[in-house]
Structure formats: structure tokens, C-alpha cells
Length: 444
Image 1 (cartoon, rainbow, N blue to C red):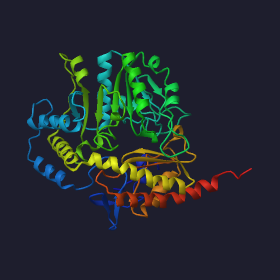
Image 2 (image 1 turned 90 degrees about the horizontal axis):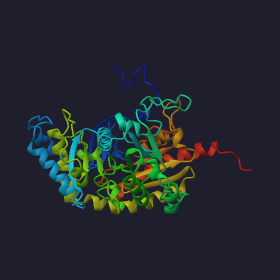
Image 3 (image 1 turned 45 degrees about the vertical axis):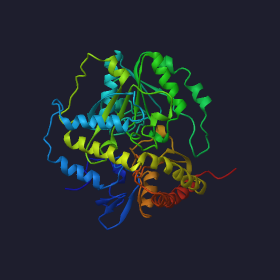
Image 4 (image 1 turned 180 degrees about the vertical axis):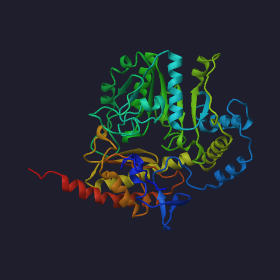
């Protein structure tokens, strides 16, 4: 049996990178170990916030193997303890906000559950997000994913029409203007101007969901607050998609905490279980919990809140608190900004760089996110840059599009690790400089 199925398109999202770097055989701390013996910095893995084989996580998984397999319908003490830890550790800075949680298996599922809950509460079907958003690949989460290379799975272009039609009407609000490193500075006044009609657009919407990193556009406090306020005035719920940013990735426990407003629902996924088990969560505010008090949220799953997942969540939260990793990432934010400013100055192929904490995106000149498609017979330039970066000792992936790479090393990384990671990116971008430079039109 071969790794590549004969019917598979040549380049499909992450598949474009499979096999280009070597086969992973092991992991240790911030490194992945390849079959040829190379130790590579795991530079893009939001699912492994504590790196690989963290002793506390390994110990928790071994102990959890002795637990019974408890269906979500049964009350179980360890699941209750996981809820308590999430409230008391994860939401410690929001003591009056936490109202309840429903565990599930993935960020996509969490977003789908949150959106469908909003529809049930409001009696509306329309949903809203922002440009460049990615919220998942199933159900309503897929409907709210506007990046074209992910919408529909096969990701092919039929005269500009998405491969799979949406099941609901979707409002696409403007994203925040500007980036931390690049030609366009953040502009709160322009943000306010372009969102002037948001309340009217949300007047018949069930919810607006905002992510904080996707599509190389990072949320700003003012942008969030204006949309959240418009949603509340329009009777729509505000959902914070913290699947990537939740639990420290951005240098705060949650991305929404940079703003003044607070969401009705927070969704968590990816690294909530430290990568040791599929885990995610839908967390509702106390205000929303009181609003639906007396109703039954009739949704259940065989493996939601699984004993292994609950053990992983509890161990992860304990390590974050004990080791002060959220504060550690907040400090590393400045290290990454300094290193990436040097990269931007050195490489004319770089159009813009944006990021927070330990999640950064590097967008190349010539990339147009509305044309980010995986249906190409040619290897995307971003993938070629990532392959060259691997020669310098770091694994950096893309989302399958032509011109965007993202960096998300483990939260346990130190300054020297980030220096090595960005040095590998620097090496990879030399190729982009050559390719983009050779395709540029001659000066007048």
C-alpha cells in the first residue's frame, strides 16, 4: 500500500508537504525526529503546545489508561474535575464569566455546536464571520470558513464558485486593517468606518463568530469590540473562536481578553489536550447559562469528554499554571517581533507579517487570499520555501495556499529556539526572493 492514493489530487492542502521533509519517527520536547536521524524544530504545530513527550502529559495518559470508558451521558467525577480546572485555571482572570462547558472532539465540532446552539437560542439561521476566516471543515463551521482552499474539501474552482454550496446564509464582515510588520499600519478609525453597517447586517443573524489568527489577519481589540457591540445590539450572539489562541498561544489566556467586550460563547480545540488526545470544548458565559436555564441542550457524543481527554486537559492546565507559560509567551512575543522585523527587512519577497505571542504569519508578495486554491498542478511557492527551511533544521508548514507561511512553535520554546526557527525561515525565504524577483516586471 502506498502513501499516495491514485485518485488524490497532486496538491491538496497539507498533502502538498507530505513526504517533502522526511518521515517523522519520534518527538522530543520542541523537536520532531525524522527517519534519517535529523532533529527538527517543530515550528508549526498548534496541537502540541507543550511539545512532545512532556513528562506530565505522558504520566497523565498512562494513569488514565486505567479509567473506565464512560459515555457522556453518565456523570463522572474526573470530567467534573476537568470542568472545575478549566473554570478555576483557564478562566481565572474571568471569575464572573464562566457559566458551563460541553466537551467535544475537535475545534470544528466545537464551532459547529456553538453555532447551532446560537441558532436554537435566537430562532435565526443566518450566521456571520470576518474575511479570511477559518472555523473548521464540518457542518456550520465549514459554512463559516471563507478561505477558498478549505471550503468543500476538494478545493477546486468552478468558475469562482465554491465546490460545496453553503447550507446557511453567511455575512462576511471586513477584517481589521493593518499588520504589525508591513506597509499598512493598524487604523482603528478606518476599522470603525468599515464596520459602520455591521449592526444592520447582523439584524437577522443568530451569531457572529470571530477567530484571532486565521488567514494571516490577527484580531484587534477595537475590531472585536465594535463587532461584539453590534451583535449585542442586533440580538445576535458573539462567539470567540479560540481554537488556536486559547490557553496561552497569543500571550494571554484568551485572545478576546485584549478587548473590553466579552463573548457569549468561547470555543476551544487543538491544543486543549496538549495534543495527547482529541479534545475541544464549548464554553458558555454565565449570562447565557442563565438565559437558557430550564432548557435541555440536547446534544451528546459517544466519545465527548472521554476519560483520556479529560486527563490530558487537566494535566495541560496544571502545567500552564505551574510553569507560568502564558506569561512566558507574552515575553516571547517581543522576541518574535524583533526577529521577524529583521527577516522582513532582509527579504523583498515578504509583503507583510502579523502575529501575536507564538503564532505568526508571513505573507509573500503576489499572494491574494481570495485565490488561495489547492487545485494546482504546481507546487505552491510557500511549500517550496518550507522545504528549503527544513534544510536549515525547522519544519514550517502552510495551509496549502500559494503565498503564506505560519510559525507556531511550542509554548515551552526559549529565545535560542526561536532564533533557530526564524533563521530557518530566513534560509527558506532566499528562494522566494529569487522566484518573485525573477517574475517581477522590469522597471519603467
